[in-house]
Image 1 (cartoon, rainbow, N blue to C red):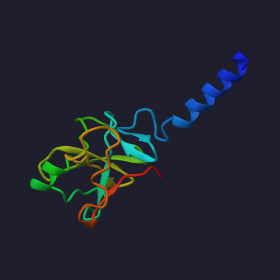
Image 2: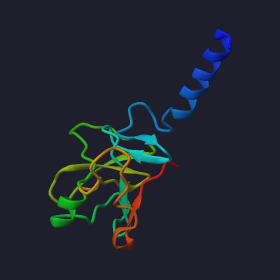
Image 3: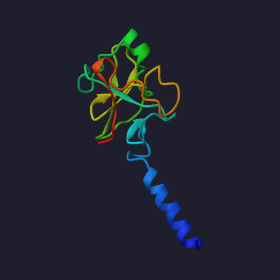
Length: 124
């Protein structure tokens, strides 16, 4: 194969794995789902409201919120919400995001469908 053809294939491959979210977003896309900066799957909770987490206490111990730092700025897709304990959390299109403690490595999706209220977060 010639070098130009291989370069074109390599560039096309890079385009296929490029995140579908902004570079400064708190998450990226991997295999059609949102993941945190460590590659861990992110989830949404059906009992949450728009920009309101209802997963607190023991729930948050099992489903750690995707933490935002003080001063973090959202945009039309991403918002920073204040949790009941005063900590900050990222939400995507108004849905607060969480990881799951039983996911042990990037790509694990053991939280999908738990209690019929937890779902893998997907890009819009």
